[in-house]
Length: 115
Length: 116
Image 1 (spheres, rainbow over the protein chains, first blue to last red):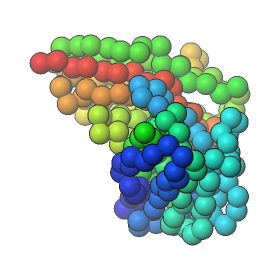
Image 2 (image 1 turned 120 degrees about the horizontal axis):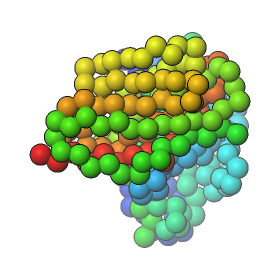
Image 3 (image 1 turned 135 degrees about the horizontal axis):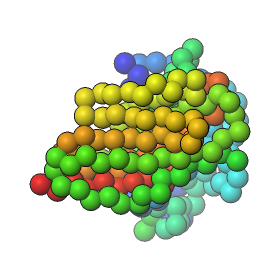
């Protein structure tokens, strides 16, 4: 159990367009989901914390109007990169915290390339 | 402020050598959790271990072992008899507070290359 999926696994989009990334907990309910970003050969940096039914909490320096996060249900959180630019090209990883349990589980990641 | 330092950026070893990956952390909390993850070229994070601040007992799992020392704020990871399949980026991470499900603060990672 405790599987987290992300869709798509990779995406290429043109500069100026928007792209949505989904993070799903497949076999458990997740009250909290986290979104991380990883640039090539760098570490994972927390972008935001998403709680079901409430607004996401963004880390300092992350533009909330550019990275829209929606956690509409206990099994789904989405990250929408609006008006994407080449500098947004990165590996985006989500993790989900299992309801009632303190562990969190990572998704496989989504590689975004903006041309 | 909380921080995780992995001073070794890259390590190269030959198969069957033992290798230790260092991790030093900073936190003001008395309750915290430490983690190690492996990230192979596919990118997916593989959970290796979680330790809470009250459990300083060292752990061994097969070829892997971990040495947690609060006195030096270190949580080092040793791979014994390394194999080519161990080649990956390894991240040490910290989670503060009394809930392991809070966001993780990652170190910069150590790239391990094991050659045959």
